[in-house]
Image (cartoon, rainbow, N blue to C red):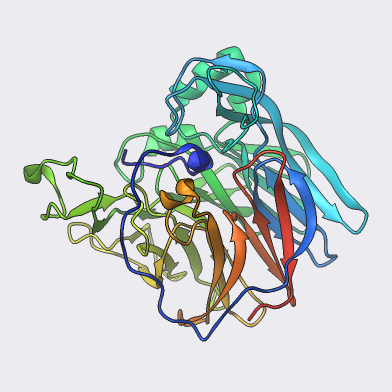
Length: 408
């Protein structure tokens, strides 16, 4: 309950939508003209756009034929495993595969690895970034090394879940599940789900572990440093009786619930500080996702917190009032573009309210616009006048990559 494996968002159901606040009124809210660059994709998530108008897409895949009777993330199981994850590239000639055969896991449909909705909400490749020929990508998990071992015993490729791979002169892998198991930066117990990645230099990649509520710096020499941890936030609880007994509720009010931060993506602000989007975990109250700004001059480990018991250190709220923020990027003028997976909230998405958007902020965090007309979007990338978004990001076979130059 206290974590969300966001790769499995599409199979959450059965709860009423929580009420909350909405973003501040924008100066420019509109539905731009979206151009379909690619379709028929399998759970497209993170994006990277280079200077030659090539777009890299992390596709989480559609699971596979290996059935494992075990829970994973927020799924009770059984789980279907396969090697259908991939990194694709969109060019003027179409879509081509750059890396294939990557692990993918999804929930079985009526106990079988088939069916009309099979492949929905798969976990697999989540984030992708490229810097001077070096391609980095993450593969999700939503569990512990022990859970991964169970999956790998049936489908050996599953052993590569919870990895961040960095390759140019040959791939180098970082096992985020093992790092989480050893360090547990947020002190909440081991739970790893690698998501956004960002190549911050020739020898360094910054990676999000959304399950571990942490931001990690991975260096080519094999060193790992925890850059930041993300503490819970007390949010309104409107789903009936609060499941936390009053005497154990750290929020001190039964109307409130300590929602996990669940960081999702990372980008560099124009002033060189890092920006990190957060989804906000159970009860997924709309309006309580934030983007944090981590001071590049901060020495030691930053703590991003709005929790009275955990003081914030080297981190501040850059943008507030968001809902289910799953991706972000910084445009050429310094504007910050944040993907809202579901404008009405994660829980509302499964009662037919599946509209998502891109919320636009200026370099100081002021809300200046909204790009609408999306359906459960995921990743985002900007380059020059163009912005691309992965749309229908939790569906197999119908995912898209859309582009617009009508930024605001």
